[in-house]
Amino acid sequence: MTSPDTIICKPTPWFLLRAVVMVLMFSVFAVLFYVDGSSGYRKKNESFYLNRTFQTADGEFSKMNSNGSLTPAEWKAFAEKQTVAFPEDRSILPASIKLPMPWPPILHDFDKMKPLQWNILWREYTKEKGISSSPPEEPYSAQKINEQWIVLWFCLALAVVAAFILLRTIRRSISADDVSLTSQQGKRVLFSDMHTLDLRKWDTKGLAFIDYDGESGKGRIRLDGLTYGGFKKEHDEPAERLMKHIQARFSGEVIAYSTVEPTSTLESESGPS
Image (cartoon, rainbow, N blue to C red; front, side, top):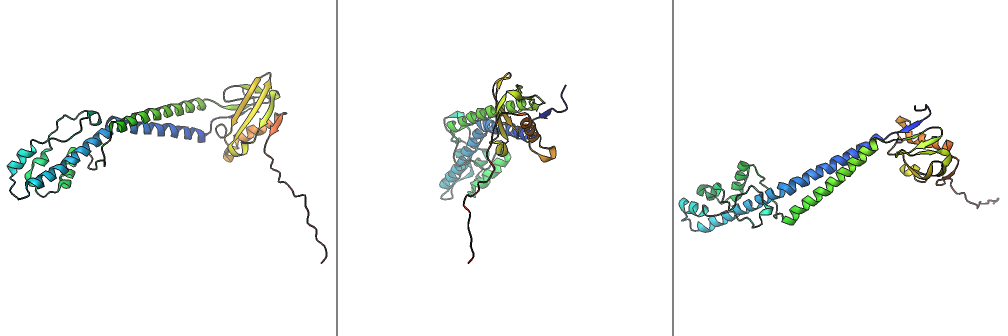
């Protein structure tokens, strides 16, 4: 049974929120890199080469109709024989593409090609097909696509680590009764075995270290007040109460930065004028 004087510092909402945000952030990054590596960059490459095809068709039509004698039948016969100039490396293209791919039917239409406004036809085509009308400036290489998978696994690893830390921490706490302190790892150390209390980082980072040697064994306890207990005044500063509880029962050496301002040994003297 827990004594009424026992102080228990559980994980702070600040730490838990930060851990949850990190898990979500790395998970979202992993999903984005998965989309780019599995299909996103390949679809953008498809858009790039299709967009280039519209520009090529516009140039061919302008050249064949330079004297205004090109007929709809001649253009259609030419366009039907053309294919989209995709690269030989199929790995950078969507797996659903069937090669060779003929020019889109909209490029076979003499009346639509005649105004020589390929960009308008491109927007019309992409809207109909539901693809992006803004292709990348350059196609993505196989190396660039593979990099997405590498970063994906890296983000997944970070998400797993963050989730592990979150799950591990959420079940832990630091507690102290009249005779001992129990660390977040479950190690119980008697106050009588503690010989050094390092408070140099307590005021700035909420960290303190306790060295012990005796009946409880030998080792060091790390107290993280920002993670366990916290310093919010509206919660009565649990971490600070824990530290005062420890200090009241501690009889060893305390290491802390001095807060006493040095005084000058020189005094000015003044006399009658």
